[in-house]
Image (tube, rainbow, N blue to C red):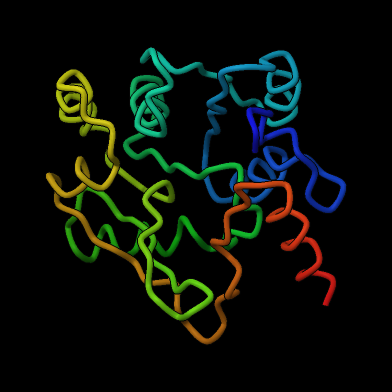
Length: 191
């Protein structure tokens, strides 16, 4: 989004990060908010839901894996669920479905797959439920300059969970990478 803080951009008059907090909070026991700027704003929102704000420990804008790493380091439960802020319509049963698949498949990571606008199933690697015990594996991967979620996840016992049921929102995993994307998503919801 041209260098602006994506989490502060409005979707239906609410900042994207607040959408993520509101959708995820009822699905989990504890929340962590990963932010690297505008920390005071995120701390205020975090205080509303008793969530700690954590900052990436890796330098050079290492991407989502830096958030995974600090999340696993701060996680106080056996599992860490990650979601991005730029996908405000993710399902209200996301964690339950990923948790069921993780358990049924005796996996270490459950990751979302969903169809795009053309019906092609795409992996959504930032929507990920993982065991906290993967911390050392991720630390080793990032210490070796690994930066791709998919490459790290492929080294683990991974189950992909397809969100392509009849009742699933076709725009549930549409991520807004530009202000125009965000406007299109808002327009779609009004129809």
